[in-house]
Every structure is written in C-alpha cells, then in structure tokens.
Picture 1 (tube, rainbow, N blue to C red):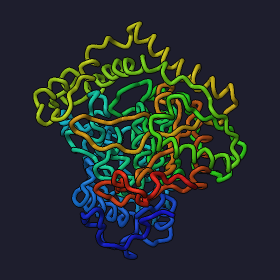
Picture 2: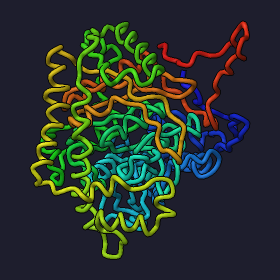
Picture 3: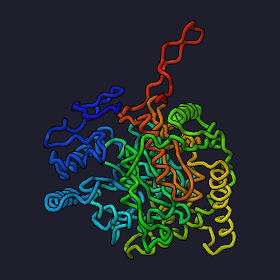
Picture 4: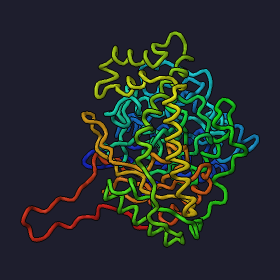
Length: 548
C-alpha cells in the first residue's frame, strides 16, 4: 500500500523535528499527494478541481517543504507565469476539452534545459546567472503543446556533475544542496537531483531529468521513482546544456511506470536541430496497452559481472526481484556475461572531449553581457568567485576538458568507436542475441549514502554505464528499501526497445508496488547493536524490504 495518500495531518513529526505541511486538502484544494497523472487528469475532467487549483497546491507544498520546513532545495526557480498558464488551459478545457493526458498537469524540469520564458537556465552555475534562453528547448515545446505546465526549474549537481572527481551530488552554487526526502542527511544522487526529489516529495506531478551516465536512473532509484533513460535520439537534446553528443538524453522521472510513459510519449519526437533524432518516425503511445502479465514468457538476462557485489543490500533486493520475475512467468537466464570494464578506459576521455566542444558551442550563443561565453571563461569565473563556486570541491574535470583536442582528432574518433562497440555491438547486442533476450536486469545502484561536502560522494556502483555508453534505453523501478532507503531494479536492452522495457517494468511494478511516499526524516533509524557479550541481540527490523 502507498503511504502518505490523503494525508490530513497539518504537521509531520520525524526524528524530533516538526516540519510544517500544507493545509489539509478540501474540495477546493485537491489532494495531490501520490496522485498519478491519470488520477489528476480524471479529477479535472470530472470538474472536481481545476488546473489552477493543482498549481496552487503544488506551490503550497514547495513553500512548506522546499523553501522552509525540511528545506529540500529541489526547486531552483518557480515559473512566475504558472498560474496564468493554468487559467488559460482551464479556459481551453472548458471550451474545447483536454488536449490529452498532460493537459493542465504541472511538471518540473531540470535547470539545464532552456525555457523561453521568465525563468533562467543556469546548470546551477553563477556563471550563467541571469541567462534567459531565447526559446524553449524542443522537448519543452513538446510538453507545452501537450498541455503540460512547466511549474519550475529544478536544482541539480552543478554542470550536471562534470566539474570534479570529488563533487557532491545535488550541490550547486545557485541552489545549494538538494536533500533526499527519505533521509535528509542522505544524498539525492545526481545530477538530476532536484527533479528526483521534487517528484518523490510530490512537489510536482512528474519531472524531467537528463542523463549522460546515471543522472536519471540513480536519483530515480534512491528517491523511490521510476526513471527512463531513453535511446539517444528518441528525445531531442536541442536547447539542453550539453555534456556529450554521444550519450546525452533527457528523460522522465515519475512515481509510476504509467506516468513516466505518458511523459516520454509527449517528449519524444524528431527535431531537425538534433541529427540524432533522424531515426524517429512516429512516436508510439508508450502508456497504451500496458499489461500486468507482460513478464509471462519474457526472457530476462541477469547481468551480474560488475553490476552485483558492491552492495550486499542491493544484491538482496535484486535477488528478491528475480524471484518475482520468475513467479510472474519470466524465463530467467542467469548469469549472462557482459564486460563492464572495456568502456572504463575510453568513456571519460570521450565525454570530456565532447563536453568542451558542446559547451563552447552552447555558450557562444549567450548574450555579450554574460560573464562566461566559453569553457575557459567559466574556469576563470570559478577561480574569481572561488568562495561561492568552489567552497567544497575544485574543477579538475573542467581543466582536463579544456586541454582536450577537437572532435576531428583521430584519437577521439577511435575512442568513440571503441566505446560504442564494446558497450553496444559486442556488449548488450551480442548478449541479447546470444540468449534471445527481451531485457537485461540488475540492481540500479546502492542505497543513498550520507551527504559529505568534505570528501564528496561515497559512490559504490551502478548498472548505468553500458546502456549509457551504447546510447541504449534503461528504466529503473522501485524494488525495495534498506532501512527506509529506496533501491531500484534496472531493465535495459537494445536500442529503441523502450516500449518493451516499459511493458516489462510495468508488470514488475504491478506485481510488487514498492513505491512508498517519503516522510522526510532527518536521518534513518538503525537498530541498536547489542552490548558486547550479551546473550541475546535486541529485536530489530530486517534491513531490507524486498518481498512483493
């Protein structure tokens, strides 16, 4: 059962700290807690409430939980026109009916995605403070055309976490430190930290993140969400501050598979400004015909090498999930042998080369009054504003990127080809063909670690890299908890197999329903170890909650 639904309490008492909550919902104030897109849309269709009232309720939650109270710091900037847009969409609904499942639905997007409105696009950096993009990113145009309301921009790991080896996920100079709503002293993971926390804490109906390697699926996993990292090219990257033309993509983050699928359908599409989208023709309705029995007969490969073993708790949750897959009729091929190390030596070099070229191109379009219009100028800006921009970690990745040669360099071209080969053709494709698989499965990542601004992230491992380097799709679904901290299960596979992966993930979700609303504790409660030499240990809850 989902906790927190229809909560009527005016305050939330956790770990001795009281955080003010929005007022109880009334007929004029719709209850948005854990409501799905389908439920919210049905309420507006039935006349129970309006889009304006939805926006008002989410803004109250942002005021109570993000700006004060728990101070989640997930929201970088609220759209000052959100209520006016909601009024327009309410009037349109009354006159013509809804455009579709996103009509009047408030969503949030990461602050590295352009909006041609009164909100800034900064990637969390003070170097871009004041930058207003001249037009919407292509995916934002798609969302607005579908009737979605861009409620706010979300905080992120600054520059999408490409600045330092010792960075702290969820920290930016503009927005400060994002906090995990399942334990406020734990990492929200990154770089789509604010998007993950906003969706998890019901600050918006759903969110959009971006990923180069792990930046959607990791924050989705540790925040108890569904996250979809699409095939590179399914969703246009034009209007997104870039890292890598080989690996970058935007994707949905939501509380259910259906909601994520609805958002993906609206975002996807061919864009003349992004050559990677040329392979996209008609976009299917990813939320249509979802079947709770879709696992029956599906062939699932368990990718153990490099994807298990770094976290015993995540392993236990994954093993329980594999048992569920079997119970639901899947044919389990265990293990399948994927080489997770071949791409380690080439991925970062490729990313840094592409980052230099892509960022310089993006920044060159900024107005002449902006303080930084190239990577070199951003580096200089950070040095000049060290106390604000680099109080905790440096910019060694920026400096390494600045020293890279151009995209026409033979060494770079060889590395790109090697990376794509070993992750794609000789990696995921080979294994799936060899075993006639429908998907690969592994734990997404470990439970959230403590926020540590001194030493940076305590990152143990994940299953994100092969799909990221290959440019292939990856979806994570809530699979259980470790002392109240969510852990996700990953489904990944061949290029353009989103529809299949979404169906399989939906069937797993429906069989388990592990999603639980956060309660914003200051920290997790751990069992007290028995005194040395005592005859019996105290009764304590099991560390994992992974049973269906």
